[in-house]
Image (tube, rainbow, N blue to C red):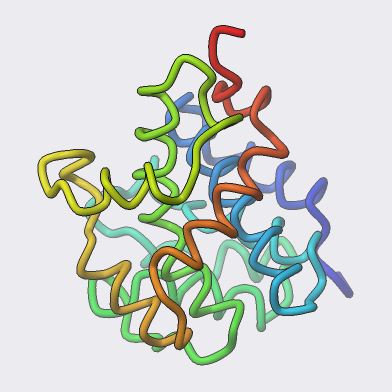
Length: 189
């Protein structure tokens, strides 16, 4: 495979991921990664595809996340660079692959960040359609809100990217807003 497309990533992911919440997470991270790609002037679809595929082995191996990713994705023909990016999102948790490229650092950062954005959007009548960074940052500062999302890890990723949380949140919110219907974040309107 010369380039991982979003269609191919969805096809590969569907062989291993069936739980609704994991598919929704894949869609959220994919949308966020597409927006990050645009920010860095990179290939949007490729970044979206990597985002879609990043938790490929999680459903089958939650306690051994990423230990069953490399060989399986290689067998599907996923390019090495994309496999490395996927492995790097677990750096310091379940992987020793350090995020180095903008794509890797972005995936490391937005994986958890999308959870807080999704939770904040769900609290609003209009969903993500009118979510502003200021409102998001209030939720970000409230450690009890979306408490399972690792803020230290997100902050570490922001530092690696040399960007502020608010700036990355703005990019992620915009990226997810484009897919509001598909992500179930369009609100009751």
